[in-house]
Length: 131
Image 1 (cartoon, rainbow, N blue to C red):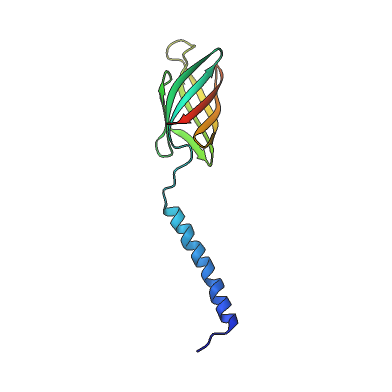
Image 2 (tube, rainbow, N blue to C red; image 1 turned 120 degrees about the vertical axis):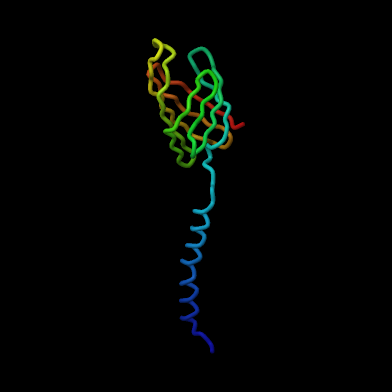
């Protein structure tokens, strides 16, 4: 039996949401990493000097900071090319045991990132290169 043109058009249009839904479910099941995830060689710009370190960034485990400043950051937010995190850390400029709040906001561009680390002792420019 021959289908009418209207019935063919209806069936074609009815299949489109189903196909889009299948593609959407497939993308949800993929484990696509955030652009900031990975290991980064980091440079801290201090007045008159630079310090180096390494950051290991993972959406699941946060940020592990290694080098002169070492800490584990659990408060990590990744959104597209933006990343931000917050943590409490010892303040090297204050008496032993003194803690300060650190907040970082940055943007990833390919294999590089740049941002600002906000501290109670002043703000630092941070740059990173993917390992």
